[in-house]
Image 1 (spheres, rainbow, N blue to C red):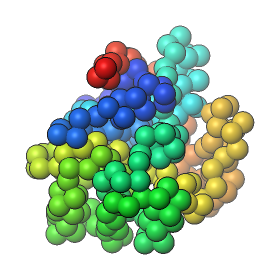
Image 2 (image 1 turned 180 degrees about the vertical axis):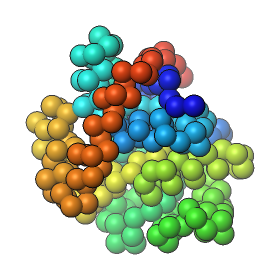
Image 3 (image 1 turned 180 degrees about the horizontal axis):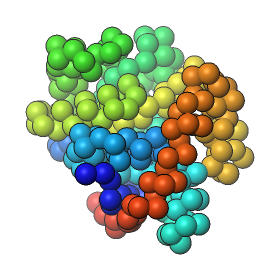
Image 4 (image 1 turned 90 degrees about the horizontal axis):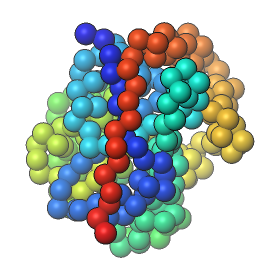
Length: 249
């Protein structure tokens, strides 16, 4: 069965930063941030839909999608882009002595992140390429996260759907405590490994175009061939906004 209903949680960036600030470290939850490509995955793949159903929070990553939905459905959705959320956490929430876990990125990036924010308790593990197809490698990732639990935040930076699969596995195993976030390439922007689109392009929902122009060979199929499928998908999908829960006072 293809995707028929898509629900987002009613959080923009400032509101969700407050949720993250007050997250109870004695419980586990994970955050997913869908973009247009994720919506296509959700339509194609029941297993990917299950990863989203198990998430504690589904935050809209894409201003492009928000504009389309506003124009076609007259539904205003708040945007909480994953890269903005990651940057906001480091700028306003994370403290140097907070226990953090980073899955993905190389050692140089982890060192650069620690140096930039003065992190003293960053536990870093970078699984090998294609690890998600190796049960032993997947178990090693879960073991590492659990060994460094409870954490304030676990940053899963290994791309979709790998990061969502790890997040769901941690929930199923029931040992990790803290808030896990599926953040894709967000650390690359913070460490300078990648350049993010100018702010004016972000605000217009054109970040995808900037990325395409930066890496046309790698991204042309994703954005120009696969991407337009999202228009037909949205026509037959019920889009809903779930009320936000207030953070503890």
